[in-house]
Length: 112
Figure 1 (cartoon, rainbow, N blue to C red):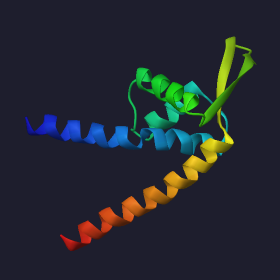
Figure 2 (cartoon, rainbow, N blue to C red):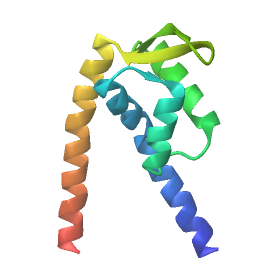
Figure 3 (cartoon, rainbow, N blue to C red):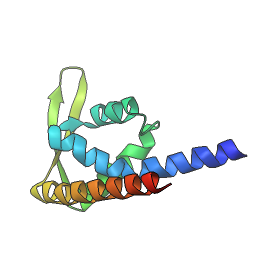
Figure 4 (cartoon, rainbow, N blue to C red):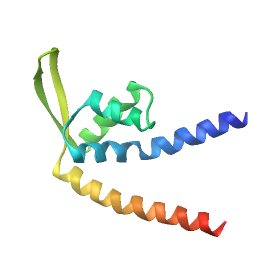
């Protein structure tokens, strides 16, 4: 039972930073969805593909992302995502919030 609670807590923490991490990845370069997925999996932030697409759609609908189609030499055209100017501004604000949050958690840990 305790292990279930721990896994649930870890999953909730990952979900909380997933959208931030997607924006951070796209700030570095335009990416195909499978590239984003691979980077998130490598960082152990996501394990299932079905989690990524709703987040990308939500961010696109919010004006944070756009996409373009590129021909592929190995199959159908690929959709490459990129940050919009609004997405870059939003990410900059999230960066500040993230560093404040990390600082606050570190402070609490030091008080313990």
